[in-house]
Amino acid sequence: MRVEPHAPVIEAVGLSKSYGRHPAVRGVDLTVRRGEVLSLLGPNGAGKTTLVEMLEGLSRPDAGTVRVLGLDPRRRQRAVRARIGVVLQNHGVDPRIRVGEVAAQFATYYRRRGDGAPAMRARVAATLERFGLDGRRRSLVGTLSGGERRRLDLALAMIGDPEVVFLDEPTANLDVLGRRAVWAAIEDLASSGRAVVMTTHHFDEAELLSDRVVLMVGGRILADGPPAALETGRERVLRARYTAPPPVPPPAPWALEGRDLVFTCRDPLASLRELVAWTEAMGLDMQALSIDAAPLEDVCLRLFAGDAS
Amino acid sequence: MRTLLAQFRYEQRSYWRSPLSVVSSIGFTPIFIFLIAGVTGETGGALQRFLPGVVTISAMSICVTGVAVNLSYRRDQNILKRFYATPVSPWTILVGVVLSATLTTLVVALASVAFVATALDVHLAVGVASLLAGVALLSFALAWLGCALSAVPSQSVVAVANLVVFPALFVSGTMFPLDDSVWYAQAGRLLPPYFARQLVAPALGVDLGGTTPAASLAGLAAWALVAAVVGARTFRWNSAAVR
Image 1 (cartoon, rainbow over the protein chains, first blue to last red):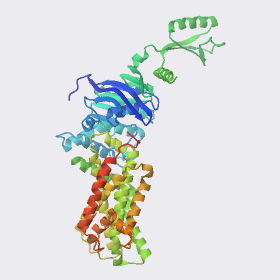
Image 2 (tube, rainbow over the protein chains, first blue to last red):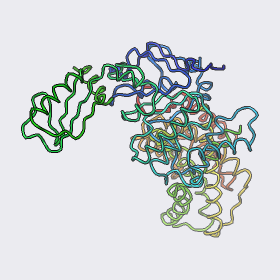
Image 3 (tube, one colour):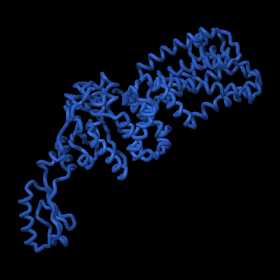
Protein backbone atom coordinates (compact mmCIF):
# COMPACT_ATOMS: atom_id res chain seq x y z
CA MET A 1 0.00 0.00 0.00
CA ARG A 2 1.43 3.40 -0.96
CA VAL A 3 1.18 6.18 1.56
CA GLU A 4 0.56 9.70 0.27
CA PRO A 5 2.80 12.54 1.48
CA HIS A 6 1.55 13.85 4.83
CA ALA A 7 -1.08 11.11 5.00
CA PRO A 8 -1.60 9.59 8.46
CA VAL A 9 0.74 6.62 8.93
CA ILE A 10 -0.33 5.94 12.53
CA GLU A 11 -3.90 6.23 13.74
CA ALA A 12 -4.70 5.21 17.31
CA VAL A 13 -8.15 5.62 18.82
CA GLY A 14 -9.08 5.07 22.47
CA LEU A 15 -5.98 3.02 23.30
CA SER A 16 -5.94 1.64 26.83
CA LYS A 17 -3.70 -0.86 28.55
CA SER A 18 -3.42 -1.99 32.17
CA TYR A 19 -0.87 -4.16 33.95
CA GLY A 20 -2.89 -5.98 36.56
CA ARG A 21 -4.94 -3.27 38.27
CA HIS A 22 -2.56 -0.50 37.27
CA PRO A 23 -3.70 1.46 34.20
CA ALA A 24 -0.64 2.31 32.07
CA VAL A 25 -2.38 3.98 29.13
CA ARG A 26 -5.89 5.43 29.35
CA GLY A 27 -7.94 6.18 26.25
CA VAL A 28 -5.23 7.72 24.09
CA ASP A 29 -6.03 9.07 20.62
CA LEU A 30 -3.04 9.80 18.41
CA THR A 31 -2.39 10.45 14.74
CA VAL A 32 1.06 10.69 13.20
CA ARG A 33 1.62 11.81 9.63
CA ARG A 34 4.26 10.87 7.13
CA GLY A 35 7.37 13.03 7.49
CA GLU A 36 6.45 14.08 11.03
CA VAL A 37 8.79 13.77 14.01
CA LEU A 38 6.74 13.30 17.16
CA SER A 39 8.18 13.27 20.67
CA LEU A 40 6.37 11.66 23.58
CA LEU A 41 7.45 13.46 26.73
CA GLY A 42 6.58 12.54 30.26
CA PRO A 43 7.88 11.40 33.61
CA ASN A 44 8.66 7.76 34.39
CA GLY A 45 5.48 5.69 34.42
CA ALA A 46 3.64 8.14 32.16
CA GLY A 47 2.81 5.30 29.75
CA LYS A 48 5.09 6.37 26.89
CA THR A 49 6.78 3.00 26.32
CA THR A 50 3.51 1.09 26.72
CA LEU A 51 1.88 3.35 24.13
CA VAL A 52 4.79 2.95 21.70
CA GLU A 53 4.80 -0.84 22.11
CA MET A 54 1.09 -0.95 21.28
CA LEU A 55 1.75 1.14 18.17
CA GLU A 56 4.59 -1.22 17.19
CA GLY A 57 2.36 -4.25 17.70
CA LEU A 58 4.65 -5.61 20.43
CA SER A 59 1.91 -5.26 23.01
CA ARG A 60 -1.82 -5.90 22.73
CA PRO A 61 -4.16 -3.05 23.77
CA ASP A 62 -6.93 -3.84 26.25
CA ALA A 63 -9.18 -1.43 24.36
CA GLY A 64 -9.02 0.78 21.31
CA THR A 65 -7.72 0.38 17.79
CA VAL A 66 -4.38 1.00 16.07
CA ARG A 67 -3.62 1.26 12.38
CA VAL A 68 -0.02 1.56 11.24
CA LEU A 69 0.43 2.18 7.50
CA GLY A 70 -3.23 1.21 7.18
CA LEU A 71 -2.75 -2.17 8.86
CA ASP A 72 -3.54 -3.58 12.30
CA PRO A 73 -0.07 -4.19 13.80
CA ARG A 74 -1.28 -7.16 15.87
CA ARG A 75 -3.19 -8.98 13.15
CA ARG A 76 -0.69 -8.21 10.38
CA GLN A 77 2.45 -8.39 12.52
CA ARG A 78 4.97 -9.42 9.89
CA ALA A 79 3.58 -7.11 7.21
CA VAL A 80 3.74 -4.12 9.54
CA ARG A 81 7.16 -4.99 11.00
CA ALA A 82 8.63 -5.27 7.52
CA ARG A 83 7.79 -1.57 7.08
CA ILE A 84 8.71 -0.15 10.48
CA GLY A 85 12.00 0.26 12.32
CA VAL A 86 12.24 -0.10 16.08
CA VAL A 87 14.81 1.07 18.63
CA LEU A 88 14.01 -0.42 22.03
CA GLN A 89 14.65 1.30 25.32
CA ASN A 90 17.30 -1.34 26.12
CA HIS A 91 19.99 -2.33 23.66
CA GLY A 92 18.94 -5.95 23.03
CA VAL A 93 21.82 -7.19 20.85
CA ASP A 94 24.00 -10.21 21.67
CA PRO A 95 27.40 -8.87 22.83
CA ARG A 96 29.27 -11.83 21.28
CA ILE A 97 28.27 -11.02 17.71
CA ARG A 98 30.27 -8.69 15.47
CA VAL A 99 28.72 -5.43 14.24
CA GLY A 100 28.86 -6.51 10.59
CA GLU A 101 27.37 -9.91 11.42
CA VAL A 102 24.40 -8.56 13.34
CA ALA A 103 23.72 -6.01 10.60
CA ALA A 104 23.82 -8.77 7.96
CA GLN A 105 21.58 -10.93 10.15
CA PHE A 106 18.96 -8.19 10.49
CA ALA A 107 19.20 -7.45 6.77
CA THR A 108 18.09 -11.04 6.07
CA TYR A 109 14.96 -10.46 8.19
CA TYR A 110 13.99 -7.59 5.85
CA ARG A 111 15.06 -9.32 2.63
CA ARG A 112 12.70 -8.54 -0.22
CA ARG A 113 11.87 -10.67 -3.21
CA GLY A 114 14.69 -10.37 -5.72
CA ASP A 115 17.30 -9.15 -3.22
CA GLY A 116 20.49 -11.00 -4.09
CA ALA A 117 23.59 -11.40 -1.94
CA PRO A 118 25.42 -8.40 -3.52
CA ALA A 119 22.42 -6.13 -2.89
CA MET A 120 22.21 -7.30 0.71
CA ARG A 121 25.94 -6.71 1.26
CA ALA A 122 25.64 -3.25 -0.28
CA ARG A 123 22.69 -2.41 1.96
CA VAL A 124 24.56 -3.51 5.08
CA ALA A 125 27.67 -1.54 4.08
CA ALA A 126 25.66 1.60 3.28
CA THR A 127 23.73 1.44 6.55
CA LEU A 128 26.85 0.96 8.67
CA GLU A 129 28.56 3.81 6.85
CA ARG A 130 25.54 6.07 7.30
CA PHE A 131 25.66 5.60 11.06
CA GLY A 132 29.44 5.87 11.31
CA LEU A 133 29.99 2.20 12.13
CA ASP A 134 31.87 1.04 9.03
CA GLY A 135 35.15 1.17 10.96
CA ARG A 136 33.67 -1.03 13.71
CA ARG A 137 32.36 -3.72 11.38
CA ARG A 138 34.57 -6.45 12.85
CA SER A 139 34.19 -5.35 16.46
CA LEU A 140 32.17 -7.44 18.89
CA VAL A 141 29.00 -5.61 19.95
CA GLY A 142 30.06 -6.01 23.58
CA THR A 143 33.11 -3.80 22.95
CA LEU A 144 31.15 -0.81 21.60
CA SER A 145 30.74 2.40 23.59
CA GLY A 146 27.26 3.50 24.70
CA GLY A 147 26.99 5.96 21.81
CA GLU A 148 28.13 3.37 19.27
CA ARG A 149 25.60 0.85 20.59
CA ARG A 150 22.81 3.39 20.20
CA ARG A 151 23.98 4.14 16.66
CA LEU A 152 24.00 0.39 16.00
CA ASP A 153 20.40 0.24 17.30
CA LEU A 154 19.48 2.99 14.86
CA ALA A 155 21.31 1.22 12.04
CA LEU A 156 19.45 -2.05 12.74
CA ALA A 157 16.16 -0.15 12.84
CA MET A 158 16.94 1.44 9.47
CA ILE A 159 18.35 -1.57 7.66
CA GLY A 160 14.96 -2.53 6.25
CA ASP A 161 14.40 1.01 4.90
CA PRO A 162 11.30 1.56 7.08
CA GLU A 163 8.53 4.08 6.49
CA VAL A 164 7.92 4.63 10.21
CA VAL A 165 10.60 4.61 12.92
CA PHE A 166 9.94 4.15 16.65
CA LEU A 167 12.69 5.28 19.01
CA ASP A 168 12.25 4.53 22.71
CA GLU A 169 14.52 6.87 24.69
CA PRO A 170 17.25 6.84 22.03
CA THR A 171 19.65 9.00 24.06
CA ALA A 172 19.14 7.44 27.50
CA ASN A 173 22.42 7.02 29.41
CA LEU A 174 24.53 8.71 26.73
CA ASP A 175 27.14 11.41 27.28
CA VAL A 176 26.99 14.74 25.43
CA LEU A 177 28.92 13.47 22.41
CA GLY A 178 26.79 10.33 22.19
CA ARG A 179 23.61 12.40 22.36
CA ARG A 180 24.83 14.74 19.63
CA ALA A 181 25.67 11.78 17.38
CA VAL A 182 22.21 10.27 17.90
CA TRP A 183 20.56 13.66 17.32
CA ALA A 184 22.38 13.94 14.02
CA ALA A 185 21.14 10.46 13.06
CA ILE A 186 17.55 11.37 14.00
CA GLU A 187 17.75 14.61 12.01
CA ASP A 188 18.97 12.51 9.11
CA LEU A 189 15.93 10.22 9.47
CA ALA A 190 13.58 13.19 9.63
CA SER A 191 15.07 14.79 6.56
CA SER A 192 14.44 11.57 4.59
CA GLY A 193 10.67 12.04 5.02
CA ARG A 194 10.01 9.15 7.38
CA ALA A 195 7.62 9.42 10.28
CA VAL A 196 9.53 9.23 13.56
CA VAL A 197 7.90 8.56 16.93
CA MET A 198 10.31 9.08 19.81
CA THR A 199 9.97 8.88 23.57
CA THR A 200 12.30 10.99 25.65
CA HIS A 201 12.87 12.55 29.05
CA HIS A 202 14.95 15.33 27.53
CA PHE A 203 13.01 18.51 26.85
CA ASP A 204 15.86 20.03 24.87
CA GLU A 205 15.98 17.20 22.35
CA ALA A 206 12.19 17.14 22.05
CA GLU A 207 12.24 20.86 21.31
CA LEU A 208 15.19 20.57 18.93
CA LEU A 209 14.17 17.50 16.92
CA SER A 210 10.38 17.38 16.92
CA ASP A 211 7.67 18.80 14.75
CA ARG A 212 5.22 17.89 17.47
CA VAL A 213 5.41 17.23 21.18
CA VAL A 214 2.91 15.09 23.10
CA LEU A 215 3.03 15.41 26.89
CA MET A 216 1.87 12.32 28.76
CA VAL A 217 1.15 11.88 32.45
CA GLY A 218 -0.62 9.00 34.16
CA GLY A 219 -1.34 7.24 30.87
CA ARG A 220 -3.16 10.24 29.38
CA ILE A 221 -2.20 12.94 26.89
CA LEU A 222 -1.93 16.29 28.65
CA ALA A 223 -0.90 18.46 25.72
CA ASP A 224 -0.27 17.89 22.03
CA GLY A 225 1.19 20.32 19.52
CA PRO A 226 4.27 21.77 17.89
CA PRO A 227 6.91 22.99 20.37
CA ALA A 228 6.23 26.56 19.20
CA ALA A 229 2.50 26.18 19.82
CA LEU A 230 3.19 24.93 23.32
CA GLU A 231 5.01 28.23 23.81
CA THR A 232 1.74 30.11 23.18
CA GLY A 233 0.49 31.35 26.51
CA ARG A 234 3.82 30.53 28.07
CA GLU A 235 5.04 32.85 30.72
CA ARG A 236 8.02 35.06 29.94
CA VAL A 237 11.18 35.22 31.97
CA LEU A 238 12.48 38.75 32.37
CA ARG A 239 16.12 38.99 33.42
CA ALA A 240 18.10 42.16 34.13
CA ARG A 241 21.83 42.07 34.84
CA TYR A 242 23.49 44.91 36.76
CA THR A 243 27.15 45.86 36.92
CA ALA A 244 27.01 45.22 40.67
CA PRO A 245 24.45 43.49 42.91
CA PRO A 246 21.66 45.91 43.96
CA PRO A 247 22.31 47.21 47.52
CA VAL A 248 18.71 46.60 48.61
CA PRO A 249 16.54 43.58 47.89
CA PRO A 250 14.11 44.08 45.01
CA PRO A 251 10.38 44.26 45.68
CA ALA A 252 8.56 40.92 45.67
CA PRO A 253 8.02 38.88 43.52
CA TRP A 254 11.30 39.86 41.84
CA ALA A 255 14.11 37.52 42.81
CA LEU A 256 17.79 38.32 43.05
CA GLU A 257 20.25 35.77 41.58
CA GLY A 258 23.72 37.25 42.11
CA ARG A 259 23.85 40.32 39.86
CA ASP A 260 20.63 39.26 38.08
CA LEU A 261 17.11 40.30 38.84
CA VAL A 262 14.70 37.64 37.57
CA PHE A 263 10.96 37.74 37.21
CA THR A 264 8.51 35.36 35.54
CA CYS A 265 5.46 37.18 34.25
CA ARG A 266 2.61 37.10 31.77
CA ASP A 267 2.78 40.81 30.85
CA PRO A 268 6.45 41.55 30.20
CA LEU A 269 5.85 45.20 29.12
CA ALA A 270 4.18 46.19 32.39
CA SER A 271 6.90 44.39 34.35
CA LEU A 272 9.54 46.10 32.26
CA ARG A 273 8.14 49.54 33.14
CA GLU A 274 8.25 48.63 36.84
CA LEU A 275 11.83 47.37 36.46
CA VAL A 276 13.06 50.52 34.73
CA ALA A 277 11.38 52.72 37.35
CA TRP A 278 12.98 50.74 40.21
CA THR A 279 16.41 50.73 38.52
CA GLU A 280 16.29 54.55 38.10
CA ALA A 281 15.09 55.03 41.66
CA MET A 282 18.00 52.94 42.97
CA GLY A 283 20.49 54.63 40.65
CA LEU A 284 21.69 51.25 39.33
CA ASP A 285 23.63 50.58 36.14
CA MET A 286 21.94 47.91 33.99
CA GLN A 287 24.35 45.86 31.87
CA ALA A 288 21.98 43.53 30.02
CA LEU A 289 18.28 42.83 29.69
CA SER A 290 16.51 39.80 28.22
CA ILE A 291 12.95 38.55 27.83
CA ASP A 292 12.61 34.83 26.97
CA ALA A 293 9.83 32.34 26.77
CA ALA A 294 9.87 30.07 29.80
CA PRO A 295 11.70 26.83 28.85
CA LEU A 296 9.56 23.93 27.63
CA GLU A 297 10.78 22.08 30.68
CA ASP A 298 9.11 24.66 32.95
CA VAL A 299 5.86 24.42 30.99
CA CYS A 300 5.90 20.64 31.27
CA LEU A 301 6.74 20.66 34.94
CA ARG A 302 3.84 23.03 35.61
CA LEU A 303 1.49 20.87 33.55
CA PHE A 304 2.71 17.72 35.31
CA ALA A 305 2.34 19.39 38.70
CA GLY A 306 -1.14 20.64 37.81
CA ASP A 307 -2.18 17.15 36.74
CA ALA A 308 -0.78 15.59 39.89
CA SER A 309 -2.65 18.05 42.10
CA MET B 1 15.28 -21.14 4.33
CA ARG B 2 18.03 -18.51 3.93
CA THR B 3 16.80 -16.72 7.03
CA LEU B 4 16.82 -19.98 8.98
CA LEU B 5 20.36 -20.73 7.82
CA ALA B 6 21.45 -17.21 8.83
CA GLN B 7 19.78 -17.67 12.22
CA PHE B 8 21.55 -21.01 12.68
CA ARG B 9 24.94 -19.41 11.92
CA TYR B 10 24.13 -16.57 14.31
CA GLU B 11 23.33 -19.04 17.09
CA GLN B 12 26.53 -21.00 16.48
CA ARG B 13 28.68 -17.86 16.60
CA SER B 14 27.00 -16.75 19.78
CA TYR B 15 27.59 -20.16 21.39
CA TRP B 16 31.20 -20.82 20.44
CA ARG B 17 32.30 -17.27 21.25
CA SER B 18 31.38 -17.80 24.88
CA PRO B 19 34.49 -19.21 26.59
CA LEU B 20 32.33 -20.67 29.36
CA SER B 21 30.16 -22.54 26.85
CA VAL B 22 33.20 -23.99 25.07
CA VAL B 23 35.01 -25.04 28.24
CA SER B 24 31.93 -26.54 29.89
CA SER B 25 30.71 -28.45 26.84
CA ILE B 26 34.05 -29.74 25.51
CA GLY B 27 35.62 -30.21 28.94
CA PHE B 28 32.63 -32.06 30.34
CA THR B 29 33.42 -35.51 28.91
CA PRO B 30 37.10 -35.78 29.93
CA ILE B 31 36.22 -34.67 33.46
CA PHE B 32 33.32 -37.11 33.65
CA ILE B 33 35.32 -40.04 32.24
CA PHE B 34 38.19 -39.43 34.68
CA LEU B 35 35.70 -39.23 37.55
CA ILE B 36 34.07 -42.50 36.51
CA ALA B 37 37.47 -44.15 36.12
CA GLY B 38 38.48 -42.89 39.54
CA VAL B 39 35.27 -43.99 41.28
CA THR B 40 34.87 -47.39 39.61
CA GLY B 41 38.58 -48.20 39.26
CA GLU B 42 37.92 -49.34 35.71
CA THR B 43 40.26 -48.56 32.84
CA GLY B 44 40.51 -48.98 29.09
CA GLY B 45 37.72 -50.74 27.22
CA ALA B 46 35.64 -51.19 30.36
CA LEU B 47 34.91 -47.47 30.28
CA GLN B 48 33.24 -47.80 26.89
CA ARG B 49 29.95 -48.88 28.46
CA PHE B 50 29.68 -45.50 30.17
CA LEU B 51 29.86 -43.59 26.89
CA PRO B 52 26.12 -43.70 26.00
CA GLY B 53 25.31 -42.27 29.42
CA VAL B 54 28.02 -39.59 29.13
CA VAL B 55 26.78 -38.55 25.68
CA THR B 56 23.18 -38.47 26.97
CA ILE B 57 24.11 -36.33 30.00
CA SER B 58 26.08 -34.02 27.71
CA ALA B 59 23.11 -33.73 25.36
CA MET B 60 20.72 -33.05 28.25
CA SER B 61 23.09 -30.36 29.51
CA ILE B 62 23.50 -28.60 26.14
CA CYS B 63 20.03 -29.08 24.74
CA VAL B 64 17.74 -28.90 27.75
CA THR B 65 19.48 -26.80 30.42
CA GLY B 66 21.59 -24.82 27.93
CA VAL B 67 18.72 -23.92 25.60
CA ALA B 68 16.37 -23.06 28.48
CA VAL B 69 18.97 -20.80 30.15
CA ASN B 70 20.02 -19.22 26.85
CA LEU B 71 16.47 -18.30 25.81
CA SER B 72 15.58 -17.11 29.28
CA TYR B 73 18.73 -14.93 29.46
CA ARG B 74 18.02 -13.46 26.05
CA ARG B 75 14.47 -12.68 27.09
CA ASP B 76 15.81 -10.79 30.11
CA GLN B 77 18.33 -8.89 27.98
CA ASN B 78 15.62 -7.87 25.46
CA ILE B 79 17.47 -9.79 22.74
CA LEU B 80 14.35 -11.84 21.95
CA LYS B 81 12.21 -8.72 21.97
CA ARG B 82 14.62 -7.12 19.47
CA PHE B 83 14.04 -10.10 17.15
CA TYR B 84 10.30 -9.84 17.78
CA ALA B 85 10.31 -6.25 16.54
CA THR B 86 11.45 -7.47 13.09
CA PRO B 87 9.50 -9.45 10.48
CA VAL B 88 11.29 -12.70 11.39
CA SER B 89 8.92 -15.50 12.43
CA PRO B 90 9.15 -17.00 15.92
CA TRP B 91 9.61 -20.43 14.36
CA THR B 92 12.77 -19.25 12.59
CA ILE B 93 14.25 -18.20 15.92
CA LEU B 94 13.21 -21.38 17.74
CA VAL B 95 14.26 -23.79 14.97
CA GLY B 96 17.56 -21.89 14.65
CA VAL B 97 18.19 -22.40 18.37
CA VAL B 98 17.22 -26.08 18.19
CA LEU B 99 19.41 -26.79 15.14
CA SER B 100 22.33 -24.97 16.71
CA ALA B 101 22.04 -26.99 19.93
CA THR B 102 21.86 -30.14 17.78
CA LEU B 103 25.11 -29.33 15.97
CA THR B 104 26.84 -28.38 19.21
CA THR B 105 25.88 -31.72 20.76
CA LEU B 106 27.13 -33.55 17.65
CA VAL B 107 30.50 -31.82 17.93
CA VAL B 108 30.71 -32.58 21.64
CA ALA B 109 29.72 -36.23 21.09
CA LEU B 110 32.38 -36.69 18.42
CA ALA B 111 34.95 -34.98 20.63
CA SER B 112 33.96 -37.28 23.50
CA VAL B 113 34.39 -40.40 21.40
CA ALA B 114 37.69 -39.12 20.00
CA PHE B 115 38.90 -38.36 23.52
CA VAL B 116 38.01 -41.79 24.86
CA ALA B 117 39.58 -43.50 21.86
CA THR B 118 42.85 -41.58 21.98
CA ALA B 119 43.49 -40.53 25.58
CA LEU B 120 42.39 -43.83 27.09
CA ASP B 121 43.69 -45.93 24.22
CA VAL B 122 40.35 -47.69 23.81
CA HIS B 123 39.42 -49.32 20.55
CA LEU B 124 35.83 -48.23 19.96
CA ALA B 125 33.60 -50.12 17.63
CA VAL B 126 31.85 -46.93 16.65
CA GLY B 127 29.56 -46.52 13.70
CA VAL B 128 30.17 -42.85 12.97
CA ALA B 129 27.19 -42.44 10.66
CA SER B 130 24.77 -44.11 13.06
CA LEU B 131 26.30 -42.20 15.98
CA LEU B 132 25.81 -38.90 14.16
CA ALA B 133 22.25 -39.80 13.21
CA GLY B 134 21.39 -40.94 16.72
CA VAL B 135 22.91 -37.93 18.46
CA ALA B 136 21.31 -35.55 15.96
CA LEU B 137 17.87 -37.04 16.54
CA LEU B 138 18.11 -37.10 20.32
CA SER B 139 19.55 -33.57 20.44
CA PHE B 140 16.81 -32.22 18.19
CA ALA B 141 14.17 -33.77 20.44
CA LEU B 142 15.81 -32.67 23.69
CA ALA B 143 16.32 -29.07 22.49
CA TRP B 144 12.55 -28.70 22.15
CA LEU B 145 12.31 -29.66 25.82
CA GLY B 146 14.74 -26.81 26.49
CA CYS B 147 12.49 -24.42 24.56
CA ALA B 148 9.51 -25.57 26.63
CA LEU B 149 11.44 -25.01 29.88
CA SER B 150 12.54 -21.53 28.80
CA ALA B 151 9.10 -20.18 29.72
CA VAL B 152 10.28 -20.28 33.34
CA PRO B 153 11.46 -16.85 34.60
CA SER B 154 15.23 -16.40 34.34
CA GLN B 155 15.70 -16.17 38.11
CA SER B 156 14.53 -19.75 38.52
CA VAL B 157 15.26 -21.36 35.16
CA VAL B 158 18.51 -23.07 36.26
CA ALA B 159 16.87 -24.48 39.38
CA VAL B 160 13.83 -25.70 37.45
CA ALA B 161 15.96 -27.18 34.67
CA ASN B 162 18.07 -29.05 37.22
CA LEU B 163 14.92 -30.19 38.99
CA VAL B 164 13.72 -31.71 35.72
CA VAL B 165 17.02 -32.97 34.30
CA PHE B 166 18.75 -34.60 37.27
CA PRO B 167 15.87 -36.77 38.54
CA ALA B 168 15.21 -37.79 34.92
CA LEU B 169 18.85 -38.81 34.51
CA PHE B 170 18.77 -40.83 37.75
CA VAL B 171 15.48 -42.66 37.30
CA SER B 172 16.25 -43.44 33.66
CA GLY B 173 19.39 -45.28 34.79
CA THR B 174 21.67 -42.90 32.91
CA MET B 175 23.83 -41.92 35.89
CA PHE B 176 24.16 -45.54 37.11
CA PRO B 177 22.28 -48.79 36.46
CA LEU B 178 19.05 -49.34 38.41
CA ASP B 179 17.23 -52.47 39.45
CA ASP B 180 14.62 -52.84 36.71
CA SER B 181 12.01 -54.18 39.12
CA VAL B 182 11.61 -50.94 41.11
CA TRP B 183 8.71 -48.73 40.03
CA TYR B 184 10.76 -45.58 39.40
CA ALA B 185 13.12 -47.47 37.12
CA GLN B 186 10.11 -48.62 35.11
CA ALA B 187 8.75 -45.07 35.05
CA GLY B 188 12.20 -43.86 34.00
CA ARG B 189 11.93 -46.00 30.88
CA LEU B 190 9.36 -43.53 29.61
CA LEU B 191 11.63 -40.51 29.99
CA PRO B 192 13.76 -38.83 27.29
CA PRO B 193 17.21 -39.69 28.74
CA TYR B 194 16.36 -43.39 28.64
CA PHE B 195 15.34 -43.24 24.98
CA ALA B 196 18.36 -41.05 24.21
CA ARG B 197 20.79 -43.54 25.78
CA GLN B 198 19.14 -46.50 24.10
CA LEU B 199 19.25 -44.73 20.74
CA VAL B 200 22.92 -43.90 20.86
CA ALA B 201 24.25 -47.06 22.57
CA PRO B 202 24.39 -49.36 19.51
CA ALA B 203 26.33 -46.73 17.57
CA LEU B 204 28.90 -46.70 20.37
CA GLY B 205 29.24 -50.48 20.31
CA VAL B 206 27.42 -50.92 23.64
CA ASP B 207 24.59 -53.38 24.14
CA LEU B 208 22.27 -52.14 26.86
CA GLY B 209 19.32 -54.40 26.05
CA GLY B 210 15.87 -52.84 26.50
CA THR B 211 14.07 -50.95 23.75
CA THR B 212 15.21 -51.09 20.16
CA PRO B 213 16.63 -48.01 18.41
CA ALA B 214 13.39 -47.67 16.43
CA ALA B 215 11.26 -47.73 19.59
CA SER B 216 13.65 -45.28 21.27
CA LEU B 217 13.41 -42.99 18.29
CA ALA B 218 9.63 -43.13 18.43
CA GLY B 219 9.70 -42.37 22.16
CA LEU B 220 11.97 -39.37 21.63
CA ALA B 221 9.89 -38.15 18.71
CA ALA B 222 6.77 -38.24 20.90
CA TRP B 223 8.56 -36.19 23.57
CA ALA B 224 9.85 -33.76 20.93
CA LEU B 225 6.35 -33.24 19.57
CA VAL B 226 4.86 -32.58 23.00
CA ALA B 227 7.76 -30.28 23.90
CA ALA B 228 7.51 -28.35 20.61
CA VAL B 229 3.79 -27.75 21.17
CA VAL B 230 4.32 -26.75 24.81
CA GLY B 231 7.37 -24.65 23.86
CA ALA B 232 5.54 -22.80 21.11
CA ARG B 233 2.47 -22.19 23.29
CA THR B 234 4.40 -20.98 26.32
CA PHE B 235 7.12 -19.09 24.46
CA ARG B 236 7.32 -15.43 25.43
CA TRP B 237 9.38 -12.65 23.86
CA ASN B 238 9.07 -10.29 26.81
CA SER B 239 10.21 -10.73 30.38
CA ALA B 240 7.20 -8.75 31.65
CA ALA B 241 4.65 -10.94 33.37
CA VAL B 242 1.70 -10.14 31.13
CA ARG B 243 1.97 -8.45 27.80
